[in-house]
Structures are given as C-alpha cells and as structure tokens.
Length: 312
Image (cartoon, rainbow, N blue to C red):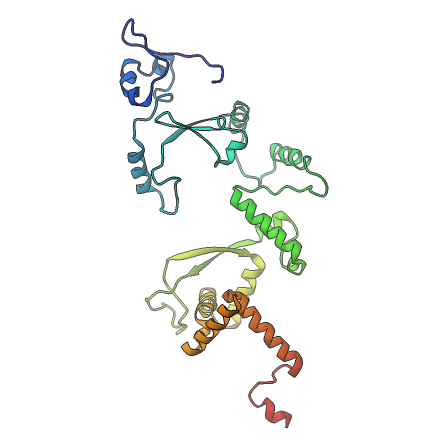
C-alpha cells in the first residue's frame, strides 16, 4: 500500500479489532468499528464499502441504462476501487486489469491524480479552444516519434483511433480518393455532417406528393458523412424533385431489393453474386465494370431503343 495514515474508530473498549476483515465478516466489524470520517470532519461514507449487493445494483443499472450499454460478465462483480494494475470488488477480491486503457499507467496513480486535479480547478474544455496545455501535450507527444510523424490528431476513444487509422491507411493505398477528402485534420472533422435516414412508415406522407419513399416516421438512424457527399446527395435529390429523405430511402431500398426487379431476376442475381463470393456493393461494381467493357467495344448507347435501326 502507498504511505498513508490509518485511522480506525473502535466503539467497544479493549476490543482488538483487525485493520481489515474478510468480506463475510465485514458487516459485523462495520458495526463495531464505524466510519471515522465524521470525527475527522470529512464526508461520511467515502471510505466505506457500499452496502448494495451486485445483483441489486445490476437491476438498477438495467432499469435506467440503454440495453446497448453492455457490461462485462454475465454476473458482473461490483468494482468500486482500483490501484495500480488491480481492480477490487466490494467483496474484497482483486482482479488484474487487462481491459481498461488506464492500465497503461495503472489506477489511482498519484502523479496522474495530481495533474488532473490541477487542471480541473483551472480549466476543463475541449480541443477546439486555444490554450497552452493542449499544445504542450501535442508537442511533447509528437517529439517522441521519428520523422515524418509530426502531426497529432486527438480522439476520445480507442474506437475512434482505430477508425481514423483505417481511414488514413485506405487513403494511403487509394490515392484517387484523396481529392474528396479535406486536406487537414481540422477540415476533415468540420466536413462531417449528420444525416438522418428515416425508416419507412405505414403512415401516409403528409405531403401531396405520391412518392412512396417519403416518410413521416420519427424513428431515425444518424449517419456521419463528409460535407461533399451531403452536398452531392442533396443536389441529386433536387434534380429528381425529391426531398433528401425520399432520395436516400429510394437508393437504399433499391440496393436491398435489387431495384425492384422481378423475383426471378433477383434470385438469379443473388445466385451469381454468391457464386462470385461478392458482397452486394462489390457485385454492383462488378456489373458496372462489365458494362464499361461493352461500352468500350460498342460505344455509348449501343443498346438504346432504336440504336440498331439508326446504324442501318
């Protein structure tokens, strides 16, 4: 344990109380040795073990958190303390922490605690404001890497870091895509827009338009996409006389249903796609490429209505 002052309150005179107890005896010793914090002018209960059992806390958690907010273990222990590379549950059992990102430095690291405390009493904001600590941190981090690694992109989670790394790797191997991607990290961040895709609803659209892809359903799925893509989608929708929701729904539904082709044709296309071991998007690229080969040989519009008659 780190250096500390041990204060213990014993209400029974002459009782030889242990400094720690096994979990099964904790409640009994808690009654004989109450929390000493009130005597020291401190907030009571901070150093006391919680009385809620893990099952009761899990039930409370399930009642207020979304189902997609998953938890580790089918029957999770209640973890309320961490020290160095260990997590400690309320039953006194210690676990080696191989999951949390904080394990790089360990839990309750006194230097990290002191640094966070100093910063929180001074300023707590995001990276879009200009202040010295963020720049100093970025400079110190960049200085640890060899050239040409000289730029820092701050993210919030490991998932964001992985997504960014995959995107940069994709751009490095596909230079043709760079023209559609902003040049700087800040521009890339600001170029992302939220686009809401509204799912089909059995309710009729409020608009007078008979567009079957319009919807008044309020259940929405949010996507993030580059500003250039949003502008393209809106432009295409305007040219076709559709609102953005109907335009996106139409294309996604077309991708799902093979654009409304008869069932026999859809079944044949699915069989061909599976034989080629392609995803639906890849298969559409394959069909377009095959069409481009025909165009190269026969010319644009070779199979347009009346094209054969004009040649004669």
